[in-house]
Length: 142
Image (cartoon, rainbow, N blue to C red; front, side, top):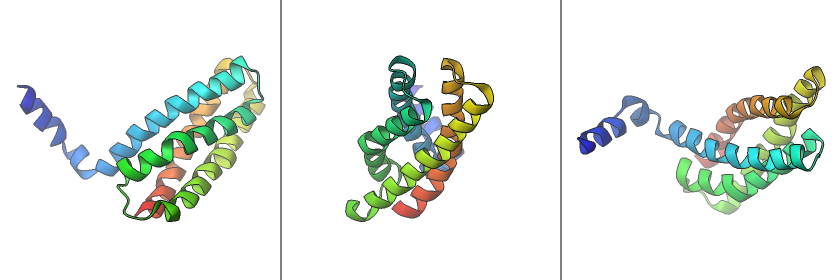
């Protein structure tokens, strides 16, 4: 029974036809958890301005977790790290510092800045940034 379930899951057309996207979403989930924890500590515990907290948390996540997982697990890139790393960092930080920060600033400007609004703004920023990242990473690692 267990073997059939594994075969059924791994043979699922969604997984077979979209392996790259599924891996990207899994890695994104890991990145989001790390990013949220750091962001929550910086914004809600230490009291940093939310945009600054987001910029710092995302930079730590991009450099500490995201590149390695995307390079090896998601895209299984054959390109050199020397070639891909600077582009990856540029796309990631633009997404985080411009796209996400702009969305966080907009939402907190419109609705105020409290613990819940700060986290909702971050979620919306991550969602929009994820689309931007997928398209950029696809170009970088292929």
